[in-house]
Length: 428
Image (cartoon, rainbow, N blue to C red; front, side):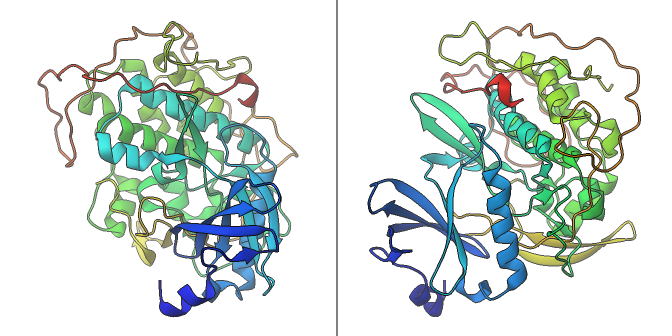
């Protein structure tokens, strides 16, 4: 942070909007800062999200910031960080008041443990699916799901996932969201879907399914499905290369779970799951077992969900914007991850004008948008909720990308995975 920034940003003890006393800075991204503060009358600790001084005069950025607040305020599920209020600084720039979360980013958890046992990993993704099922029903596509935006809260001995940072989310049918920029694609390259690399105009809820598939692949294997030393190389791989099947990297995971992960990573959106609930239905049998008293029961409502079809390195994030040409398509890349430490928030960045995504049939909609997807291909019988054996095997750490998986038997788990809270059925 520059000296001028430090002088213009609220310091500990400063009072914001005559009611919030700043306690400390929690983190800083490319365009925003998050502060811990206390409500003077209520004594409640909250998180304040502010824009950096140098960009507060950019009308397009502030409009995006307010748009994020409106988007998240529409969501009421337990797996989204709640917005409590929106107010303005003396200079007129907006700030958000959000619930203060205690815990750590899922990415930090993964960095420490290298890999996550499959039942625990599936439990985390099911919670993210619950959040995104609600968002998609409200016409909101996140477009930047990644471990840094999945926050692992410790509450009552359980671990709850909260989805963060809807700063580049896409609102279906938002007539006021017509701002444009010179960039045509936003997100973090490592987790971008192929259609997002090409153009944001082709992005719908299935892009979030892709990103969740990448995160689950990474949790299970300790590796990303696409690896390259540059952002350009990552994007080229996303568009043209097939990832090593997760079943080869992790032969210990159940075959149907491996198939579900790879189906989420199909390059053609029409070959992925039709909606996030179908994805959740496919992986739910391999999540926390019902009979385990230390884990909350997996309660995924499958009614109305299409039949699942089987289809038969990390943290090197890039800063700034990069213009790249991949397969003849120019994609302007804006990367949100900052180097402001493990608590640093992702930057809030403008996105190109959204187009109404084609929300597949079976997903409740606020209003008719886009064009329905073509009928789903013939599918085998739907997966049941019968759970696999509860014993979990965690393979040895694997940090560097490898062309071929190790075939030696992994050692047994030495510690039991922490308790995981899973989504309430009514939010799916």
